[in-house]
Length: 350
Image (cartoon, rainbow, N blue to C red):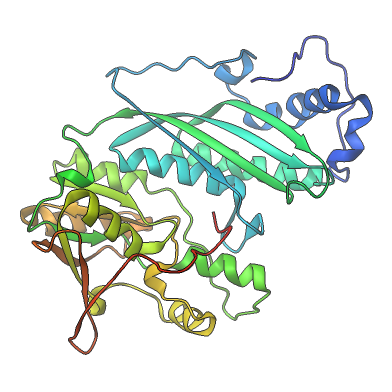
């Protein structure tokens, strides 16, 4: 862990009722020491982190590694079904899995605004630790920076992850082939809707909860079972339509899906209609799309449905010859092109 020397540090344990500014009596160096030694380390404790060095040592049996990094600025930092701490772990572990990698270790950077409550910070770290435990991965390195009041909107996180490649063949958009089936792992748009409702104070009954969760187990299970997966992509910013357009463009293929087979829950669809959103362009944080050889599609769905996070796995379409174009057959049988989003994406949802 960087930015602090913990040798012979003797600071009183901060009360959860305190805020960041109340701990700053000794200046920036002292606040970093207090936070890292008495808030972060007790919660994220593990052998690699406890070495207190500028880098963590990570080993891999195969020697083939994947690396990913992402920033999380979701507002509000806590939302129905999750918070920024678990979201950072989910997002990074899922990104590694989409490359065909098993997660090995995570690194986190915290940008904390003066006035952010210690109790809330501990909530974020505990949530992060619980998510990391579920992923069987440790946060082996971390850093903190405190910014002036009004400059950080509470808390931002930057997460990096390293993973061991388990895929035997490249899992890339350029590997997608004509005839591949397009499989989504579950219902769409819940995360974006949950965050927007929390932000706008929409009091729904029942509450729409985010789909934020880990998806590495079902994704890697497909590879373990010998399913011919050509590409994975997690359905995050920009939603399913954006992801499909990115893959169609990068792979120089056409993609055709059917609206009737594309899973959107009725309550989520209703909120999207209320907010003027198309659910196909709204982010998930616990869903992915898999491009699978047609001969393995049925078996792939069976495997995915064995996991809670992908019980709703559905074959929604096929890869075809219209290079770079995504087409959806509507409920009334009319084809329409799903372009990239023309306006701004929903801000601050991840």
